[in-house]
Image (cartoon, rainbow, N blue to C red; front, side):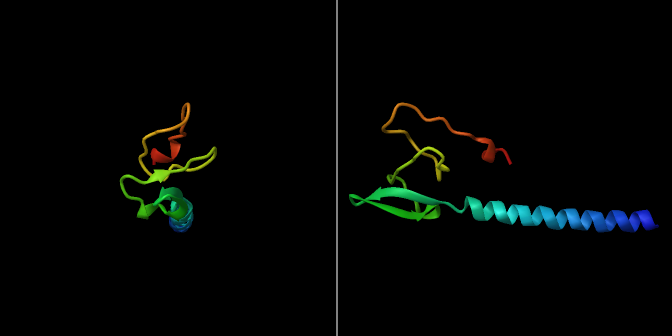
Length: 84
């Protein structure tokens, strides 16, 4: 009976930690995007992106949406965050 109780407490604790990690990742992924709109660069929330926005990307940035590369030599993206 003690082992069952310990297992329940441990399971609850692990679930609680997992929820905290998921919330942290959601906050981290709540991105800002550097875009060119109406001839000037702005930083907006990624959820406000619309088709036709030009996104400025630099090394180390998180890509905020599906994009089409229009300038530059190549683009290498780590897609590990997409494999949840």
